[in-house]
Image (cartoon, rainbow over all chains, first blue to last red; front, side, top):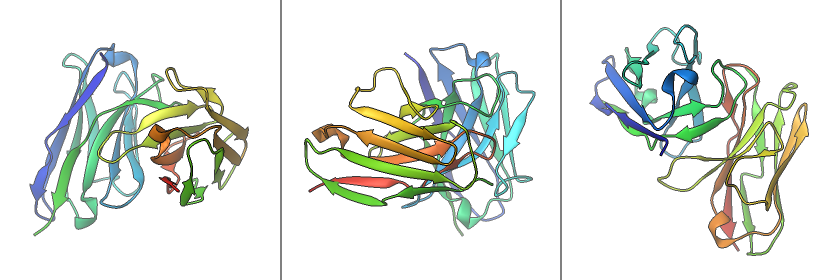
Length: 122
Length: 107
């Protein structure tokens, strides 16, 4: 069964850091691009970052560029999101998603994790 | 960034009704348009990709159409399990952006 499982969320103060992980199973992880998408309470979906299957190409939304870093370890079938300089407005459920292509952009996000909650508050 | 404008934001309908949700892009995105269904507390489920291709396992009552800037998602005959929120998303370039969502409620 194709599955994505996020972890690493929690409560952090403004200006703090967190690293999210997304463990993948059931498919050839290195063959597919991966994305992170977040959803703030009561709000819609916001794409924040993507990475190619090889890890050689990365893409960011302006709202997180320079603060967040996406990476992957294909030997561990794991996707990461390092989040620094966190702001109150980063509070959201963060989900990882598998894309149908090796290299963004262009594809559907066809498998999603259930998400991990990040709360930024003093 | 490409903006996606989705309408309506909410819709009341009955089982058996035909419903249509529209999504407009702020510039041409060819056919790089995807539709998702989301229920509370559950990850989004992909329905349609490349504007009109049905994702594997999705019932044929769902269909998509359009290209360029204007797109539609149609549910031909609503079933009880279809009452949920629906989002469009472009994948033409990064940053990907989503529509604001349509909440489909039982009348």
